[in-house]
Amino acid sequence: MRKILALSGIIFIVMGAFLSPAATHFSVSGLEIPMIEAVSPVTRAHHVGSSEVATYQTQASFAEAVRFYSSFFSQNNFMVLGNEEAGEYNVAVKKEDVMFTMRIYRNQGKIYVQCIW
Amino acid sequence: MVKKIRFFPYLCALSLCLGGCATLHNPATGRNEFILINSATESALGKTADAQMRKEHPASSDRIVHARLENIGKRVAAVSDRMDISYSFTVLADRELNAVTLPGGRIYVNQGLMNALGDDELAYVVAHETGHVAARHIAKKIQANMGYQLLLSLAFAAYGEKVGDNAQDIARGATTVYTIVGLAYSRSDEYEADRLAVKYARAAGFDHYASMGALAKLKKYEGPNSKIAGYFRTHPYVDDRIAALKKELSGVQQK
Image (cartoon, rainbow over all chains, first blue to last red; front, side, top):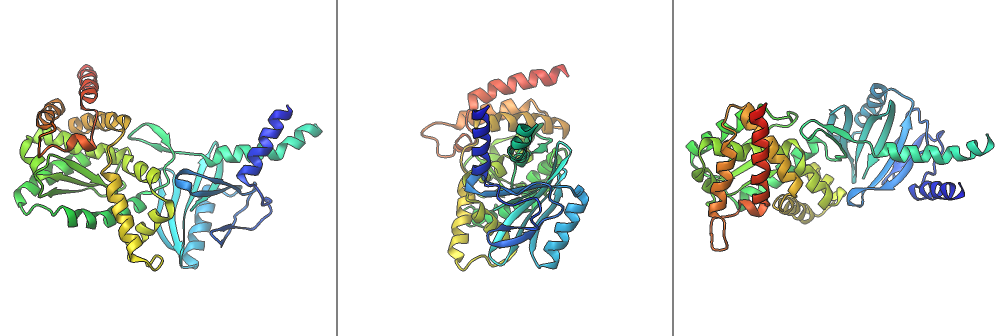
């Protein structure tokens, strides 16, 4: 049991979960991105091509989360490539020199927001 | 109970990590896959790489040969599993027997290959390339071989967005995309594109058995001294593919 606990702890630390669910923003390449009804901390990981990935689970519905971020990007003059496809919201966005992809997707009935850069 | 509560944050983090690996369902492959590059980004990358392609390989000026490819290509694209991009078909003035696909559904066939194949055989080649597009093999190849920030820079550059100060980086990035699409596909990607080619060629009303004839013809031109071979450099494993195609075609016959 201790081994499992230690392993879980290592995964937790490596993935770098450091924000509480109550956090209102998270940082992507130094840019503050607002969170919508987060029910989990933001986890961070490295993914394919050495990209960084930040993910949190939201209590908002898929449509609410999409509306929230679409309007955030539009009000803050982000350039946006993409929209909803194959059942998820998947856009590449750019503001000044910061570029990342945002995905909002369903997984086992839960809604996740993910940024990749 | 106390122990259970102590585990809770770890379990939350673990489940979120697993949730973070969620995937999209790809109707062409029938699998759930992790694909970062959305269709708009893929099309933008294709637009940038297209400029590089046309610089190195000018398009053929033969209108009749263009019309022939477009006619076949449009019929095949209309039955593809992927409809969220707009397919384009271009004949390149190159005598090498090859066909290549850039991101975003840009399919190029060399004039040499056009001249060597009949319509049904050409439909198989175009359907095979369409299979690579529908199965998102190109997006996956780029995703695996290219830095993510460079990839996004190139996509935004296609829309005239200024990215950093160095135009040379963008040019180098376009060359990288161009180089990556010129790399050989994996064995499993080739099998999958062949399977989809049979499906699309048949659905578009072409003789799907012509796939065997096309590969056999192309094999005849291969060899160390051939000056026009090239198809199997980017689309390898020909003998295994012929064997797999035979199996696929006998399955289609039974349906």
